[in-house]
Image (cartoon, rainbow, N blue to C red; front, side):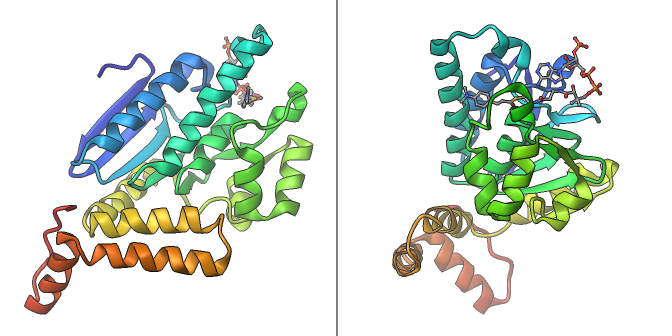
Length: 260
Ligand code: DAK
């Protein structure tokens, strides 16, 4: 499928989805959100893709938020539809059976930071700036930001970031645990690709079930989470990946996982 605002490349199990609307610093309008939803849906179904990287085109922005110019003239119905579309994208990333890495190459603001937070983890350029400017526009985060940020970095730091609307730099984002690692801008994609390739080389189903257990377990009591983990763990013993992974260890060879 062709997209007007996205560049999709896939090779060796790793797909890169680049949001490419530089005139608005890759801001998320209805069309861009719809394209991201379609692209992620397809990438999730594509068995050759084992890990996905989401990034922004250019060296200035990952995504500078939802498109303020489009939102400015929305009525309540359109605002509602827009919100539902954005939330579908964020939930889709969480429900995808494969890991999604955010490579934050510049501004990640508002809906852009929510997109990054919906991913399984974030690598950031040392020049990135992150924040939730919604309150400066008279609104609040609405694509899951209040929920995902507070769960990731705790309520107090989330409160400070969201209530002030101020941006933080990449160093502070690292210190707060918002991003996993800072990388020189020119090395960001290489780092993300290296990690995605490592994920693509291990047991597909083990990775997929681990993602499922972590995401769903966070909404359970610890005891229910343990029970859920045990069920998924058990299911893996009915898969070719488990047979192949363990046979390869015993035979002292590299496993060739089929994802089945
Ligand atoms: N939307 C539309 N256009 C944007 C944009 C945005 N978010 N961000 C930047 N642009 C455009 C600028 O208007 C400018 O366009 P022209 O004037 O050239 O036509 C171009 O991109 C370059 O931007 P600047 O000239 O401003 O570049 P600077 O380097 O000076 O500044 C900046 C970069 C990122 C600091 C600045 O552009 C900026 O403050 N941008 C806005 C950031 C922002 O406030 N983002 C948060 C948006 S609120 C919802 C759920 C969620 C949301 C909404 C609804 N529902 C449940 C309904 C989410 C809301 C948000 O994300």
